[in-house]
Length: 162
Image 1 (cartoon, rainbow, N blue to C red):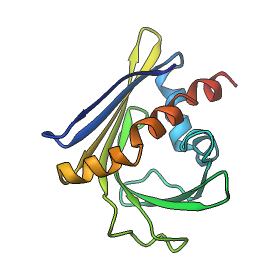
Image 2 (cartoon, rainbow, N blue to C red):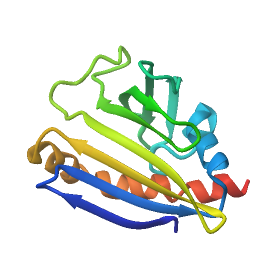
Image 3 (spheres, rainbow, N blue to C red):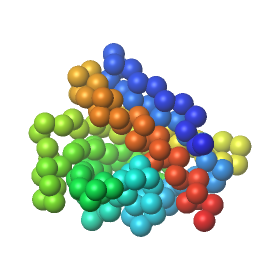
């Protein structure tokens, strides 16, 4: 399993997931840069993602939805805040109300920094989400973000091997 560590810190308002992949940094970057590849690993296995708009350019807005086994759609968006290809990117990640992708004011927005560094011929990915408050972080923890994110990230190995 690629995920090697998960830490949340209510004082620092962060959730950090570390994973290691047996692929070069450039190849891991491609997973996030290509929306068709990203669709295969963004959601947990039973909640596949569909990216409607995807552009890793600072200021761009990426939109997507995940579909539950029952066919329900859950909408989300990213606002890209920084890109350092292939070493990583930063974005604000929010929940959307519906297919309009209007932000859902009842759910938190997180600031995310994804970094990809070379380690022993492979890649260490560090995913850091920072929340506005301990309550916001606790809210997504209670929603199962750790289990969902870890199961999504753990799908990446199969994609890299294909």
